[in-house]
Image 1 (cartoon, helix red, strand yellow):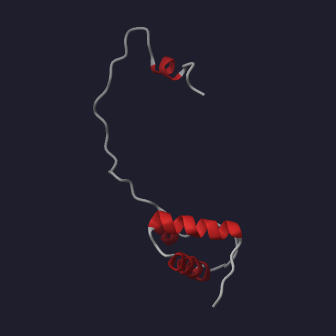
Image 2 (tube, helix red, strand yellow; image 1 turned 60 degrees about the vertical axis):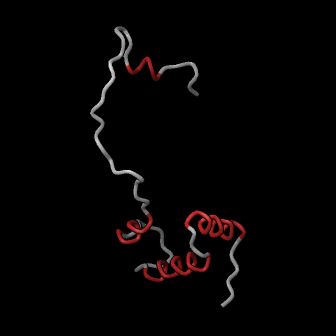
Image 3 (cartoon, rainbow, N blue to C red; image 1 turned 135 degrees about the vertical axis):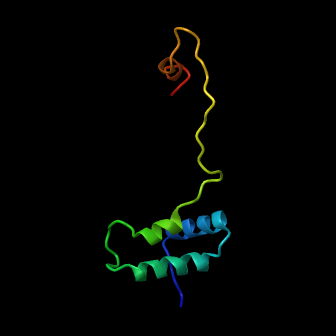
Length: 88
């Protein structure tokens, strides 16, 4: 089989290959398998849960509640900290 992709698709597959360390062939094979497994191929819609599970990148560290707090000086509130001139 010979497959010709658009330049943008080719670039996206190459970038994904570099990012994940997987071969371009493996990435394309998985994409075709997913497409063919969809009940209504080629239609826009919400992805199924199984495909979402495969695409979500787990966090590097698990979520934890931060118990350390800071005390702002009198007359200063968090809105003052956010309303700065150096912010764009």
